Image (cartoon, rainbow over all chains, first blue to last red; front, top):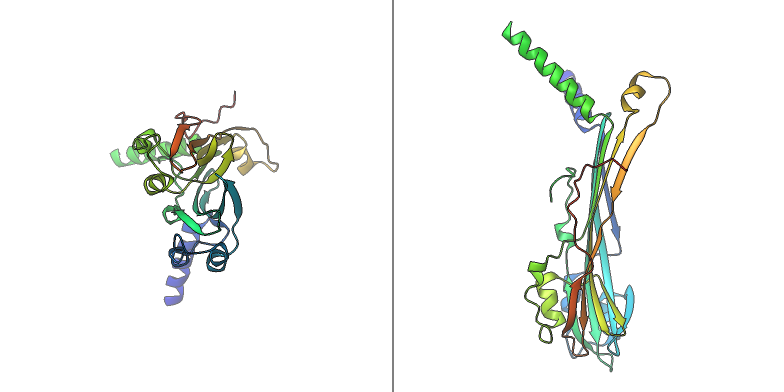
Length: 128
Length: 142
């Protein structure tokens, strides 16, 4: 009896989940907010920023200053691949951190934005 | 009698819906959040700083130096792609797989650009492109 029920449950699950594809892709490492809060404006040096967060993904020069850019991308893509109908959606968002240094190599400003927390597995391609 | 007629109508309806959807493929790729003109209403030229901007709409995706000053770029896009494969149903019955597919993909990269002066206050800003409200399903490529 238990065997038959388990078999039925397994069959039902197989039917329900057939054609489901779940994919997740990331670029880079998530930015650690504790490490970011360790950057003190006016005191933290370039070397200390590197030891806290790691080497930047990009170094930009703007207004005669060095800017360290760190980024992280997170994408979630569920898909429903049925015999006759396919739905695929990819939701991709990025986190960005910029550390602006003054001419002496001291952190002057920190700009951080996190969007990846709002990335969702949504298969329905319609709507917002 | 009424039950049988209802059941027949349901079966025909389900078959019709299946035939209508057969071979449809809908794909959507959404990158980042949309920045709307309403969200950037607060910006005052010569007053708003990069920090205030980040507080309101998040950190930019790129910061580049240009001859006008440093430019912050916010990127987002909503790519919609739909296809209709007329070979889906014959493939279920025929030993070979006929293919006749109509596909349309609309990639709409959009950008919000902000130029800063040397004090990191906004010198100018603008949208590079505006969203056109294309339907999600539109596979006619012509």
